[in-house]
Image (cartoon, rainbow, N blue to C red):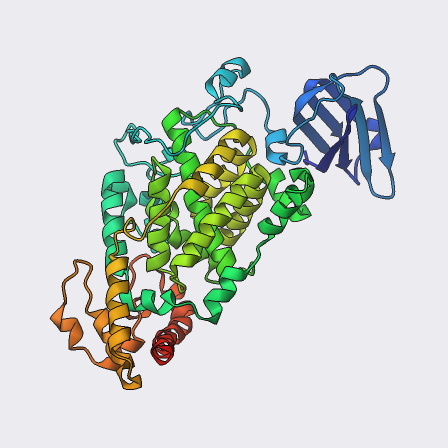
Length: 504
């Protein structure tokens, strides 16, 4: 049977279900309603919806078929007049049947509705994201294998597909390393990857950085509309393509323990930071590098990380944004944090649109579709039932969280201090390369590496870690696509430094 395209409209008294079924046999059409359970059958179509409120049959219900559009317009009165049915555009949630097992095997399951309501957090429950959370205890599988994925409930995936997944994640052999081991390796890799020259080159904003900071994404306009008392449903809408994807998502419900739920929310922040970086630096036009950018900047996607507090999430996101992508600017990171506040305030609809876009990006990027299977598809389903109150409190927490340059543990303050001294002392145009040479000699332990200071001026000015070193987590295709842009970046670093010296 086919699931038809559909949409729902409501007023204070009635709910109307619009079903597009151009090949339906009208004479054999059947409609059934019992409380919040709606069923439609007209061969070859079948549709069953679990509505957010109850409907009744009292003689005021009606059904019309419009032959010109092939649509059924079915209207039922609400059991409680004036009740607002929320989430009518959360298509995947409406399609999910009640009381069914929700995942492959018993790892995530749904019990009866009454018990489920008791287990889930109340919509009005306050939650302070700034408090220190209880450390997440990694569950042990029957095979004692490390776990990862949405709610940290998958294992053994990479062992089965290792040859096809080279370079998809940074973590080598994820099925052999625990969460603590993955985190230790991640922090070491980030520290080794940090490039002082590249950071200083982007520290002093050029025209491109300024343009990226001034870019106004869609969610900024949506927030302006919402601030004028316009409902979020009208400000944030879904395209037909997005609705089609939502209809095809798996029908699941999630019963998560407290630690799992916290990890899922914080993982969402981490993934969204990477998404916003890509969106802002491409000005909304995804490119061939977008899949690499999103998966690389997210510790969740690249190192299968699990977070227990918001501060760690933002520190990790800042670190990776200053170590890996083309634009490594501190103000850009703080701007992205502001974007996150706006997105989370707009709630489930805006987050779902972003997640659907991430899912589409990863589908088109080599073998990164596996990250959809591990994380993004589940996030697309789960977010439709996420607590609006919890998302609002998370937005407040993101806004109040302050990340300092000392927090990221990359000696940014010392690097900037030495760069400033070099610029002030070397005001001659011929000393441009001396500045970058001194910066190259700054080690993360605040010690000068004599071997770095003896390198030639050209090597210090034009080298970039993205193309000069092979990153185990980046595929050869990614390196090839980024090579020309990285070469241009090396010249830009030197040009910017020269410009600053002239101004001084």
